[in-house]
Amino acid sequence: MSALQAYRHLMRAARIAFDGDTRTLTAAYESIRRGFRENQNLPANDPTIAPAIAHAEEVASFLRSNVVQGRKEGETYKLRIHKDTERGDNDTIKLGNKNIKIGGEHKCCSA
Amino acid sequence: MFRTAALTAARRVARPAVASAVRVAGVARPVPKVAAFQAVRFYSAGGHLHKDEVFSRIAQVLSGFDKVNDPKNITETAHFANDLGLDSLDTVEVVMAIEEEFSIEIPDKDADQIHSVDKAVEYILSQPDAN
Image (cartoon, rainbow over the protein chains, first blue to last red):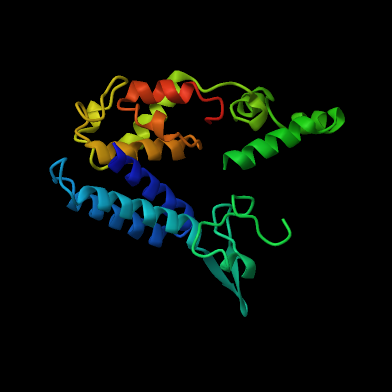
């Protein structure tokens, strides 16, 4: 079941990351489908399955929190930062490579 | 187009009696207008979705899905895998398309249980947020 869940998470993440950008969204869906179809005939006990699922989940979380859409407005770009976008600052860099969410486990600044 | 019609209808109803009386004079019968006014759904309408409507919208989603083996197989009790020839990955996509159609998000554990049209209809009807 977890492959299906990874598939769903990935599809959802793509929908969030590329919202309103039909061309990229379709391409992302297509590439997700292709990736899963390539491995659909692997036997259930194949050792490459678990890493493949982990990879899919990582891509999903990357798309969700580390991709930001921008639209050029005159000289500047307007970014669409949504609730899942990872937001850090100079202090959170010192915490190392951990997942940082505002209001999450690792408080930053004066919090 | 519906929105414009609804706005016009609402404005007409909201207008003071005098103004509408003048307006009615120019129109043969005000009855069709009232009917049109009620035919439009509003956010405040309060009514829940009806089973038939939910089914027809799900059927529409499915008929737009090119992997369904035959549109004739889309019935109220059709099973995604056994009757419509969809595999498990397709089922995930169908469930996501249904989510989008009714503007809700189905949690993983519930989404994994939806394998047939009647299950989907049942789930949508149990969701007060679905519209």
